Image (cartoon, rainbow, N blue to C red):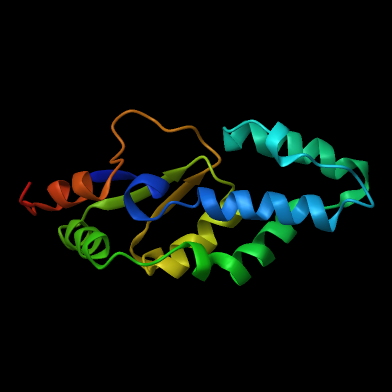
Length: 154
C-alpha cells in the first residue's frame, strides 16, 4: 500500500479564507433584493456556514455554489499566490509514490479553483472539501517541507 499524505489546503498551500470572506460580502450585496445575508452572522466554521447558506439560498437565491465558483475564478488571483517552496515539497512527496489528499473546511467549489490557481491540482489525488481539520494533517508549509525531507533553517 502506498503512503498517504494529508495536507490542509488553507494552512500549507494557500489560505482561502480571505477569498471566502470576500465572496460572502459580494453575495450579500448581489442578492440583497432577494434575501438578506449578514456575513458577520455566519459561523466561522465553513462547514456550518455552508449549511446556513443552503437555507438562505432556498429562500429564492438559487445555487450559491455556482456563484461561489464564478466569484472564485474571477477573484482568486487577488487572494492567492502559488508558493514555489510548498509546490516543490508537494512534488517531492508525490515523486516517491505517495497519495496526496488535500483537506479543507471550504466548499469543494472554492477548493478546486484554489488548487488550480496554486498550481497543484494535478499533484493532488483526492480533495476532501467541506470537512473539519483532522488530526495527522500537515497544517503548514514548514510541516509540508519536513514531510518532503527538506530541512529549513530556523
